Every structure is written in C-alpha cells, then in structure tokens.
Amino acid sequence: MKVLTAVGARPNFMKVAPIIAAINRHNDGADDAIRHVLVHTGQHYDAAMSGAFFTDLQLPAPDVWLGVGSGSHAVQTAEIMKSFECVLAAERPEFVVVVGDVNSTMACAVVTAKVAWDCAGARPRVVHVEAGLRSFDRSMPEEVNRVITDHVSDLLFVTEESGLHNLESEGIPSDRIHFVGNTMIDSLLAFKDKAEASPVLKQLGFRTRAGGVSDYALLTLHRPSNVDDPDAFLDILAGLNDLGHECPIVFPVHPRTRQRIKEFGLRPEANGMRVALIDPLGYLDFVAVMKHARLVVTDSGGIQEETTCLGIPCVTVRENTERPVTVEHGTNTLAGTTAPQIRAAIRRQLQRPAEAVAPEKWDGHAAERIVDVLVRASAAPAKARAERLAIDGRRPGFTVDANVPEAIPA
Ligand code: UD1
Image (cartoon, rainbow, N blue to C red):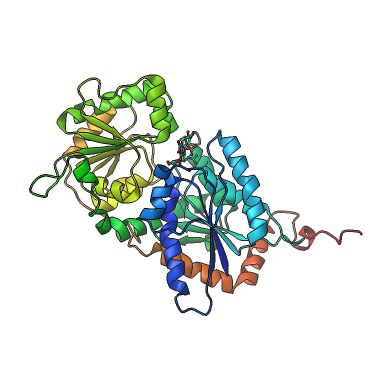
C-alpha cells in the first residue's frame, strides 16, 4: 500500500503530522507496511510559513518539492496541477491524501480524480481530511476549494457533526464518509506541553519574575476580505482600540497582511493602542502564545478550533464560520467585521470564564482512525471500485460497460 500526502500551506502541516506519525506507528513491526511519500507544493515557501513547522512538528523533509510559489489563484492552482500530475505518474500511489481547504488541497485532489492509468479509469483514491466544513459563503476561496475537493473525493474524513449533515445534504454517499475527529487537535494535544518550553513569552516580556504570565491578547488577521481593503482593515483596527488600551496585543503578521499594512501606510499603534507587530511564529511558539493569552482575536479557521480545546475565549472577525461546533460548544464567538461589533464581542468574551471543551472525537486519535480506514479500504479495493462505479452508474443512460471504450484500433 502506497500513500501520497500533499501539503502546501501553513495550516496543512499540523494536520498531516499526526497522520504521518500514525503511519510510522502502523509500520512498526507490521507485515503490511505502508509506503509514504510526502509532496510539498511550495505554495508557502518561507522559513517562517513552512520550514519552521517541519522542525517543530518533527515532519520528515518532503520527498518531492514542487516549488510553485505565489501567484493569482488561477496561476498558483494551474502550476500545482501541472507539476503534481507528473508526480502522480511517477509515484502511482494507491491513495492521495489532501487536507484542509487551501489551493494546494483542491489542485491535487482534482488532478488525482482525473488521471486514468488504464482504459477502465484505474487511478489513486482521493482522500480528503477535514471534509464537509461549509461557511456557505462562496466569496471565500477556501469555500470553493472545500466544495470541489469534497465532490471529487473517494474517502471523506469529517471533523465535526455539521460536516456529516453538509455532505449528506449535497448527496455524497454516506459510505464514503467517516467521522474521525480532528488531526489538527491531535497535533495540539501532542505538542502543547512541549510548547511550554518555548522562550517566546519571555522574549515578548510577558513572563513575570514569579514565573507567571502577565495579561495580553493575541491577534491574527489574513483573510483577503479583512486585509485587502483599507477601509475594512481600518475598521477592524478601530474595533481593537479599547482592547489595546486594556492590555498589550501581540500581532504575528502574515506576509499578505504585512504587505497591505505597508501598501496602505497603516500604523496600528497610532492612537495609543499597545500592539506589537511581530513576524509569523513557528508552531510551538504560537501554541505557547495562544495557550496563555487572555483573549484571541482572529479570522483564521484553525485557531477557532485550537482555542476551543485550550479554553481560551476567541473572537472571530468574520460574518460566518465553517466550524459551528466552536461557537455552539466551544469558546468562540462570531463578531462580524465592523468596529462596534468587534468592540462588543471583545467586551462579552473578556467576561467569559476560561473553560476547555473537547468536541466529540477531538481526543488526539483522529489520525489513527484515518490510517485504520485506509488499511481496511486498501484490503478491499475491488469492492470499493465496484461500489464507486455502481454509484456513478445511477446517472441515467450510463452503464459500467458503456464507460469502457472499445479497443483502440492499431
Ligand atoms: C493561504 C490559504 C488560506 C490559509 C492561509 C494560511 C488559499 C486560497 N488560501 O492563504 O486558506 O488560511 O494560506 O497562511 O490557499 N507569502 C509569502 N511567503 C510565503 C507564502 C506567501 O511571503 O511563504 C505571501 C505572498 O506574497 C503571497 C501572499 O503571502 O502573495 C499570500 O499567499 P497565498 O498562499 O497565496 O495565500 P494566503 O493568503 O497565505
């Protein structure tokens, strides 16, 4: 059995690390060892956005580096697809695992779903980890990536119950779907104690002499809708002003956001708000800063989940979330994006007691469940393929035989 995992951008790395670790545990003394190939598209390429995560999460160096870099969505996606098709042809894996919702996820899934090794259409099976999440907002590039990836996937691994309902309502057959939990939380639980050794809190001046931690808030912003428009960005900063007078705000700045701050000539600290703009943090440093924050303000998807498990109040600067469990059961609240909304949400969340919640199956074992399903699916490939053809065969006028071209004349 050969598994190829494709990663590309920062939020992918913590989602695949536990899967690779679970494959290694499976291989320990097993007769049916899994061969694993790690492909990095190069969507994120800086040490701060990529390299540091490989070290912190103890990931192996990628076997293949595509080096696609930045570009418009079309250019970046096309470059990944062109290069990834060659890798697939050379590696011929049985499964291609993609995670999350970034351009690399969608590009690699689509390529895999469309290759054919023979005239019967034999190809690797597409495995989507973190399937079924929906913000129902198609203006988000990630939402488009999620929908496309799910609809070309053969195995869909879901992190929360809403994902099951979403996939069911979109007509994805239930035997392709597995509710396994959250591999990003597997990483958090595996590394949160190690993160305590990070020197970052001392470097930022938050460690007290008595060994405690003083009050501060953590801010991350990078969504195009929040940072690409100067008025939207300024309104968010206005909403943070009161908080920045109450306690210091640490702001690890994403490269996209850094570019916009420069371009728009913004000075977040201009009206007396205490805010420290720092470079993006590595995984362990970021977990350390998040774990001890009084409050987190963010527009990220994953941070809503991590703060839920850590019990840190979170204010999400968006109109919607594809992760409703973090609001229904966790510590997250959806603020909206205007200054008064953000101010009010921050006030509410500062009153809230810290309380860690573990949504169903967010127990540190999601990756083991995934590897288990892959091993079982590999043992029954013929059956799975017959089922897939039977499902596709429900289309009127389509039969399995009709899909196999006649012999090509010499
Ligand atoms: C991507 C994902 C987003 C994810 C985010 C996490 C898509 C559509 N979006 O957005 O879902 O939450 O990553 O970071 O896939 N850049 C660098 N160094 C790097 C990478 C990027 O400087 O290592 C700069 C480039 O100038 C680039 C910009 O950041 O233009 C944006 O990078 P890109 O990967 O296109 O999208 P993100 O905004 O990072």
